[in-house]
Image (cartoon, rainbow over all chains, first blue to last red; front, side):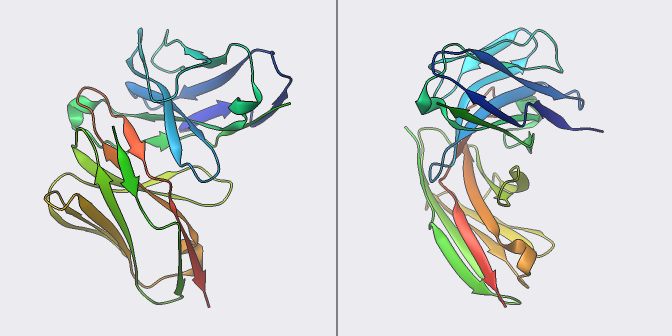
Length: 116
Length: 111
């Protein structure tokens, strides 16, 4: 099992460029989410999905879009990159909350994104 | 809104016991999770407490007091590989497995 796979691992963008961070999981998890991690600020939830075709906003959704066309994939799109979006981005997945909240979340290795 | 407080840094000696505290203030609460993250790595799940009391998993234990809005992670028989950041996180929503994370405690284990 690969678990949660994120690509790319590193990316440098110029302000105003757009790009898509990819996330795929092979555990048949219903729940998937994107977090960003900035120094000293922990992880903050950007967007999440409780199943294919269902997405919703987290704490810091501005400047990002997501879609969930399949159970396996949950890409994150930066619409027009800004220096404030320089961060490490983590994708996570878990079984659905119907199994009870607090299901262990499985994280990908992260994408380190720099915006100049 | 949500807020969690945990110490920013803790240093402990190899073989000793260390406790990392977490206090929370949230508009909804279903349980408290703990995650470990080594430098440059991904967070990994350690434990989840939904009910008051102590949960033990090997050298790690986690405690929750819902009435005090307080929990802690206890690490015993510290090893050098335990040097990492530890995050408490609150499950605060029904219908989604969303977590609100604290800012993390950096644990340094010294010989």
